[in-house]
Amino acid sequence: MKILLIPALLASLSFGSVVEEYLLNLKNEVQKSEPDFKGFDIKRGEEIFTSTHLGKKGKEISCSSCHGIDLTKSHENFFTAKTIEPLSPKANPKRLTKVKKIEKWLKRNFNDVYKREGTPKEKGDVITYIISK
Image 1 (spheres, rainbow, N blue to C red):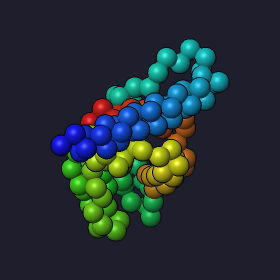
Image 2 (image 1 turned 90 degrees about the horizontal axis):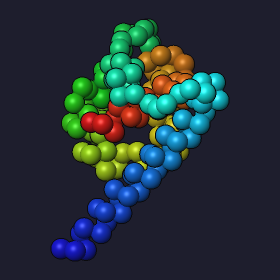
Image 3 (image 1 turned 180 degrees about the vertical axis):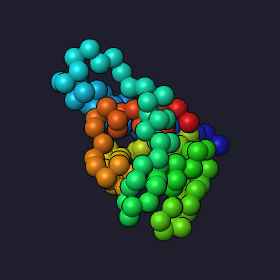
Image 4 (image 1 turned 30 degrees about the vertical axis):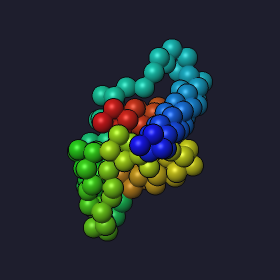
């Protein structure tokens, strides 16, 4: 039984440190242009995640179009109909464990919805929103 707890503990520590480091790097980037910036905001992240835009393929889309509103549940991709596993790291410990993957998916998803790359502030707000779920 103790053996099962160790991998779970390590996974949670890995998740926390990866996300914390990533958010700190984003915060440092934001502060270069906004010296008074205090931190990322769940409400701004929610707005970015749920607002609808004319995105990829000229379709009205939001992040929640593919990931759903309840980030602890699987959802169907708007374009491919493939199942997307829960986005919340609380429900899916494989989420947000590698910076390279976080950056890859943020870039791809911002391009799908907003037709541009997200700003460091937007990325930080979205990640803050996701980890709150």
